[in-house]
Length: 110
Image 1: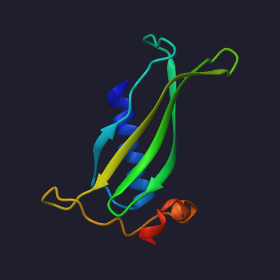
Image 2: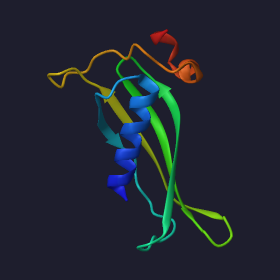
Image 3: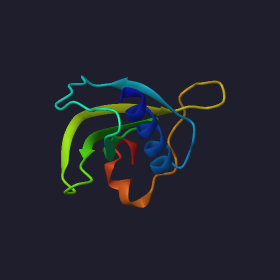
Image 4: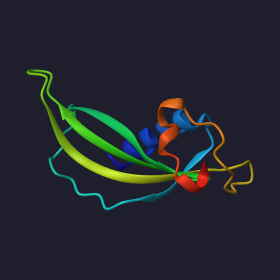
């Protein structure tokens, strides 16, 4: 599950920031609220919390989906921080941000 969350978070932040060079900096406390069994469908949702100079904080929520009645149960919520890096692995400024997330950039970064 943690691997899925990390992969989904990296893909989401790459899309928001317009670059594939995003790495995980930190993951908040992870508390699993419901069990997940093999064969169950898991849907992962993401939202941007804040965008800094070279980092982006997101909240991911994984939900167990029932194919029988369409209901979803929250399995885990986690905040993650990703950093944009260059070819040497050093942090670089996030320059491109999808317009619908532009207002999430912190005031001093605008």
